[in-house]
Length: 273
Image (tube, rainbow, N blue to C red; front, side):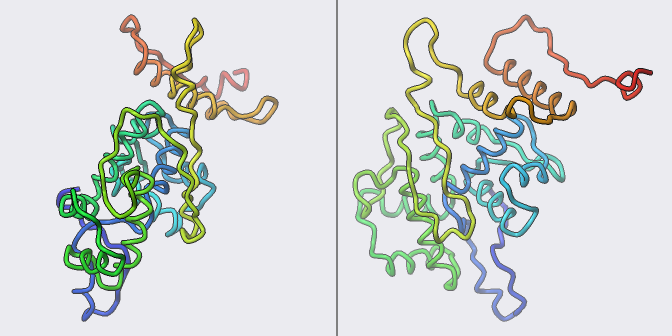
């Protein structure tokens, strides 16, 4: 995030340049960012995902709303650009899509936002000020006067989703990370399509006893991307799925050092040539 400038709204009035925020923060909340991470994982696993494919996976178009969602995920350090038109999960993004590490990753993602980290550092061990006073505090930290209300609302939702309000919503307390991840339902009526509803996995599934045990969360996520039987699925998309599977196998299993190669048959062979 160092040295990165994020502009949240265009302003054609040169006299209002001083109103642009000088500290990085998102308009949307942490759950919106996690939805992007989950969509990348469901589409491409741990590999890179083309932006147009990600938009389709999220049932969106390459619009301003889509860029706002992906930009939010980047501010929380869950994703990073890969080339000119692709995106991939960061290490923190990989942790947040896994039930085993999601709770700790949520807390860390919250602290990766410069504005949120600054507020946490200032009010650690103290009560948070009331809403309007908190907005004035954000203004002093570099948030534009026209954006303090939206910044505060996204901050409060994100703190709740990251479990920083477990000791009360009048203070920020870093959550314990040795507890199971809880489902966090948030009213997304004011998100303007940000997609705050996140599909959660049962944390107990990966810790079951018995010889069968539970599937690794990466395997579970991979299996959920399989289309229904008897539906059309192009050979190219099947190959992408198998390539993603090979990447995940290489991450979670100890092999014999031989890479797995998935290739498509040539057009001539497919046509019987």
